Structures are given as C-alpha cells and as structure tokens.
Length: 228
Image 1 (spheres, rainbow, N blue to C red):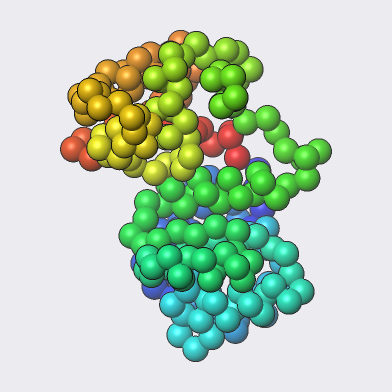
Image 2 (image 1 turned 45 degrees about the vertical axis):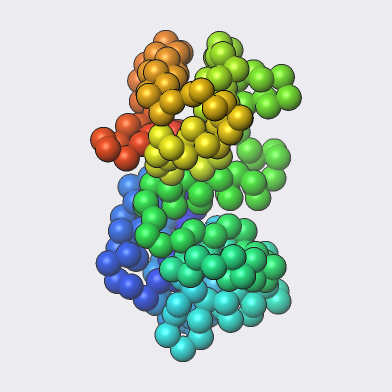
C-alpha cells in the first residue's frame, strides 16, 4: 500500500536514483526531476506529500524554488545540500524548510527524516502511535505499548540514537552526547550499553533488529517500516 508521493528534486542522477529506490522500496510513490522550474510546475499540477529538494540545482536553485513554493504552498520540504555552513542551514530553515540533510548522507537517514517530517505534519487524527516512545521527563521508555525497563545510562544513550533514526553515531560521539559529564566513562562502555539495549529490545520485539552496528564506525537506531 502506497504511503503517498515524494518529489525528488536532484540533478545528480546517481543520488536521485538511490533516493527513489529507497523510497519506493519503503512503499512511497515518487516523482523525479533535476530542474527547479519543472519542480514548481509539477508541484502546482499535482502536489506531493513531501519534497526532497537539492540546493545546488542548475538554473533556478533550491533556495529560489523553496522561496517560490512558500508563497502559496505548505508542502513539507527537506533540503539536501553539500553546504555545511550554518548560515546556509539557517537560511533554508528561515525560508520555510522543514528539515535539512547534508551530503554525504545515508539513504536510510533520509528515509527516516522523511517519515519524521510526515509524522509531524499529519493531523493528529491520522497519526499512529510510534512503536518506540521516550518520556524524558520520567526517564521512561515503551516499545509497542510495553514498558522498556532501562537504566538511566541506557535511556540517555537511546535518547541520543533516537534523535536521528538511521544516523550512524561513532562511539566517541555517543560518549560525548549521552554522557558529557562522565569523565570516567570509556568508549568500551558504549558497546556494553548497546548490548544490553539490544537484549531488552529483542525481548519485546524479536522480529526486528532495532540497533544496527556498523563495523569500525558505530551504531544507529533503525525503526521498522511500520513506524512511518
């Protein structure tokens, strides 16, 4: 069953092909163009559910497309760019972008961000309860409606991973983000905490591997397809 249409506006044919492939495999319909003016015409003719918009387009660039789009449309837009300077990021968000992804990126991360933005903009009546719920006020977590019994240390680690599902965090990044004040905590401890998290997730949801290890790189939280 289709989840709706995503318009991919990207002039790099290889990148566009990968994004389209990942979106279609996850149940989305797609449209594609590498031309900014054509993208505006396509959106006016048949509004998609979301737009993945590259900044560096030939002719009418992504920022101009976004500016024109925001005059009469609230369709969610995720900007894709190689520019990592904060001024570009802020400019895109001030013009009305819903999110921002910098190249190089993982297609899984982009797919996760698409789902996150769509969850945010869908009416409450159409929004399904996500399978993983974190309550930062109470330090509590639940998975598919059942309590996920975590230590405070495990919760802090999971909270960081859940900020950007699909993103691979190195051990050093997890250590700095989850335990900034723990001077005596080593990167090796991250492996131990991830092992415990995997065991607890598997006990409640044995059909899906929620925590993915990338050898020599780090770890990522990988929600299942039904979390869209």
